[in-house]
Figure 1 (spheres, rainbow, N blue to C red):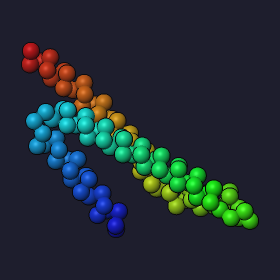
Figure 2: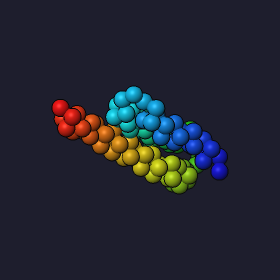
Figure 3: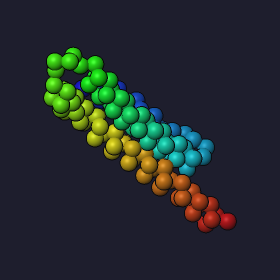
Length: 107
């Protein structure tokens, strides 16, 4: 349950930003880029953490077993980060041309 309470304010803020923004399209693009960058950062940190964890093992331990345990423990986090990365890119890439089309219709 702690993961819900840590992500709930982010989801609420991401949903409210376009509603209160003067330029909604730009806000949607910014939210999408922010989600994508945040997800990419999480993915990089998981990879760096795996590397540092395996490098810090005692010499008599099995690195493949430790890697398997680490991958098992971070599998949901890795999958979620790929999903949020895809969502962020889709949001940014979908909102960017949508504003251009709307601007052409008004002109």
